Each structure stands twice: as structure tokens, then as C-alpha cells.
Length: 441
Image 1: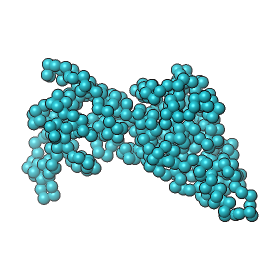
Image 2: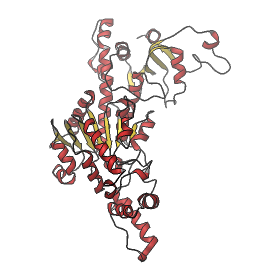
Image 3: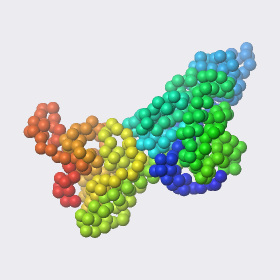
Image 4: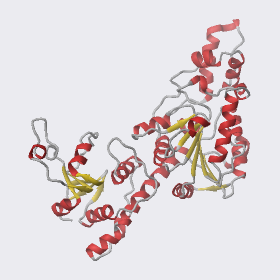
């Protein structure tokens, strides 16, 4: 197991992403990072014990301290779902605000950059992050559920169940030995064996104080043979073999390397998302380089070909604009695209002195936003974006590259008492040819 730094780990993961080889395994540590701060097993167990012991006092033996023993106690009594999960486990315990790691996982699942994700968490924070990115992450708790997802949906396989169905979640060791959990886990393990074959697997947040989860994980991954494994956790590398035996043995089976990045999983995934976005934008800029040179007779400044360094959310919004996603759609692509006119437009703005500002370009004090809108009438593009949540600082111009400004009947072009489609907005919507002429590009 080799220790590598954050950037080296991200670079390996990014290579796997563009080669359609990237898979993700995330554990409880991911959801314990701020601002999510989902409760640990120890905290849940302590609250359950306090409630149980104060309810019955000395009339009954005190409840065990560990969550594994508590769950097993109620399972053997046939009261796991109806009593323990219903009465002693806070139903809001797994709620929270998605953190950067959840947003990164959701974004990369929605784009297909992560081909398969496996989670040992029962919370729905990755799914919640996906909703905020305008997409629905494909989720399943069994082989049949994930196998039934559309072929263009990257699955999130939740091997311990989901809190949307508490009765179907795995909490006690006894559940693993009997149906329906026994069969569900066996079928899931077979599916994972094929799905993760020769994939590069990034493991984040694997530390857990839920001992039975490690047993379930070991069963699910027993026959998996990945190509490369990157473990991301701030832990001491030397402790990995003893504290996560199943994952260490999995790493020993990796054919192309077993690496450890001593960093938070949320930090790692967020940086991967940033580098992915920058790579996508860089490819668009470079795709316009030759066209720009042919048009102007000179090479673009190398600095213009490098995307501005910014936060993950801003890069995601820019990526959606240049991909052509409508206001209610997620970013969907994970392979770099060749868009010469789109790239050339961005280079021409910079040649005129424009500088990046949020999702726009500041050109002499005027903010210019660039969208990809191939083969669409300009007025329809404007109408679609009229329903978009207004940005904090609206642009003065929107260049819809690929859209065509069609002549419209006066009743549409000038608008009626209900407002106008083309001229009713203070934002100036322009096709690329009109913007080039009006802005002097």
C-alpha cells in the first residue's frame, strides 16, 4: 500500500473517469463530514440506551452500550423494526445538509463519470445533492433494483439499505444469516463482482464504528477483483490492515496498485469534481484554438486556454452552460467535447480583454454569459431561460452559440400586454453572429 498526496490521487481518479473505469465506495465517514455531521453509531447507541434505561429503570437489565449489541438484542426478540428502529432510533438522525463530497458524488454519477457507486450509508444525502443539481441519482438496495435502472444511469448501490425504508435496513448480525437479507446480500455480491471487475475503485469514509457493517462489506466484496484501489482517509496507513481487514484484502487483489491518500473523503471528491470540470472546459477552449488562429492569423494567448480556478459549484454551472443544459436539467456529459465555435467565442472574448466573473465574462464592465444552444431558435432559448432562477448578478448579454435569430411576427417580437418574449427582458439575448458584430469581437 503506497502513500500518495492528494493531487496524485485525484489525477489517478481523473484518468480512470475519462477511461470509463471509475467506481466509488463510500462509507459513514463521508456523511460525518461538515456540514452534514450525521450521527455516529456511538452517538445513536448512547441516545437509545438513555431512553431505554430511563424508561424501564431497574426493572430490566440495562441496554447494551454498542449499537451492534442493541440491534441484535431487539432482532432476536423480533422487535428490530417495530420497536428499536421505530422507538429508539431518531428518525431524523440521518437527515442533514449534503457536503461537498455528496455533491461531487451526485454530479459525477449524473454525468456518468462514476460508473458504479457503492454505499454503506443508509442516509439519502447523495440523492438529496442530486436533486439540488437538477437530477435524480439512480439508487437501488438490491441487485434487481440497480439492474433495472436505465442503461444510461450510473447506479448507487446501497448495500445496507436506505432510511426511506427503515425496516429493510441492515442493523444486526442476525439479519445477515436469514432471508430476505441473506439472499439480497448474496445477489448483490454477485452483481458487484461483475460490475467492479477491472475497475479503479476510490474508497472514501470507510472508517466506521458499526462493526457489523464491516462483516456485510466483507461478504459483498469477497470476490471483487478491481484494477486499482485508492483509499482516501486521514488515518494512519499502518492501521489500515487491522481496522479494515476486508478492504485491505481487496486492495491486495488490485492488479495495478493500492494507494492511500491521507485526506478527507469530502475534500478528495470535491477536488476531483473541480479538476473534472476544468478538464471539460479546457477541452472546449482548445477545440476553438485552430479556428481562432485561422480566423485571426495569430495563435491565442496560452493563458486563454486554461480555465479560471474557481469553486466546484461555479465550474458546474459553467459546464452546464457550455454543455447546453436547460435551466431544469443536470449536467449529463463526462467525455470532453469538440466545439470549435463555442471555444472560439470564449477566446474572442478574452482577446477583447474579457475576464472571468462568476459564470460570466466581464467585458468592459458588461457581463457576458455564453451558452451552447445548437440548432434552436433564439427566442425559444430565451423563453426557456425565463424560468431560470435569477442569478445574483444578471448578465447584460447572453450569447447563445448555435442558436438562430429568426424573424418573428410583430405580435411575438414586440409582445402584448402580458409581456414580451424577445425585448421584455433587460438582458440582451444574441446569436453568435449578432454578438460578434455588436460587441466588436
